Length: 266
Image (cartoon, rainbow, N blue to C red; front, side, top):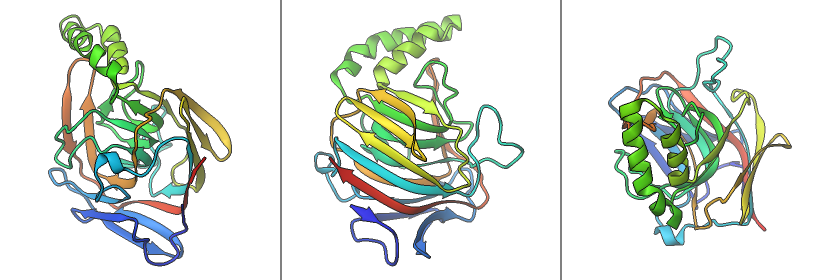
């Protein structure tokens, strides 16, 4: 499946334009954008291929390759700073997931995802020890598995200990076992065009940027997932100390553009 966005959007896509979000094609470019977003109101511009399907009928499973050429209006927030440029606010990205949350933040099921994912502060989704919980990432999450159930009680106990003692390390390790998360912060400049590639295989997921392998994660989800590309004003907090919160942020004009998108099953 290949889309060069050279005209009207393909009928496979479901368009989401919430709270002022816009989805448009011009000059063979898909633009997901909004002019402004306000805290207290969810704003989202998105395309996906799963909205009309039951989860068991989601169209994609390994082995396959995803290739996306993309850029964004603002640089990613990064632990080393953004060089004085205003960072992208909210979340954005593209790849595959199982739609675990509603737009209100209600938890529907444990998350599975294989994608390029961005979140700005104050997001703090600390699923991997040592992770800041935000930034532009290559990420795999595989919580929808039997091992997550086994890790449930130890995770709760270690989170309680972290709240009492201030020692987050055991809780961080158990949170990773529960979520099945693996990730790597990317240094890519989001404001320039880059070729992103994801090889989602049975035993591992490989992430590439401009032809260079940047991250490999073991044990990705095997179950059917749906494709999504989006930009919104949401943040999420989930820490080893048991903090769990969703919210929305103020933002000026932002956009995510995609030139081409190809999914090739092996």
